[in-house]
Amino acid sequence: MAKISHFLIIALVFTVVIMVAETEACEMTLYPTNCIVQDCQNKCLEKSPTFTGQCQGFKCVCTWPCD
Image 1 (tube, rainbow, N blue to C red):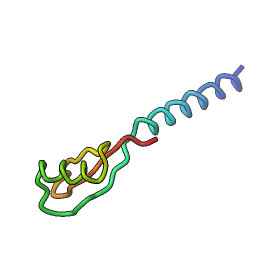
Image 2 (image 1 turned 180 degrees about the vertical axis):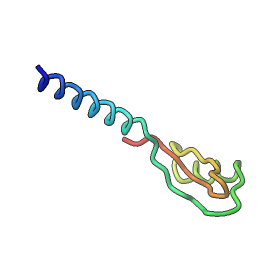
Image 3 (image 1 turned 90 degrees about the horizontal axis):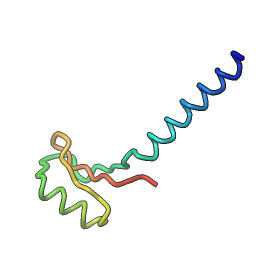
Image 4 (image 1 turned 180 degrees about the horizontal axis):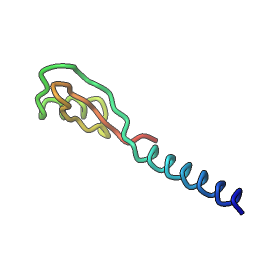
C-alpha cells in the first residue's frame, strides 16, 4: 500500500510541475538600461504581435506565452 501512495504522490508532483511549466512565459531582454514603458511595449510589439513589453528595473523585457 505504501508503494502505491508513494507512486501517486510522485505522479501528482510531476503533473503540477508540467502544468506550471506550460503556463510560464518566455522572456527576452530587449535592452538593459533606461526602460520607458511605452517605448518598451512598442519595441516588443515590433518584434512580434504576441510579445508583451514591460520594465523590470531599468531593463526592457519582452515576454510571450511558451509553447
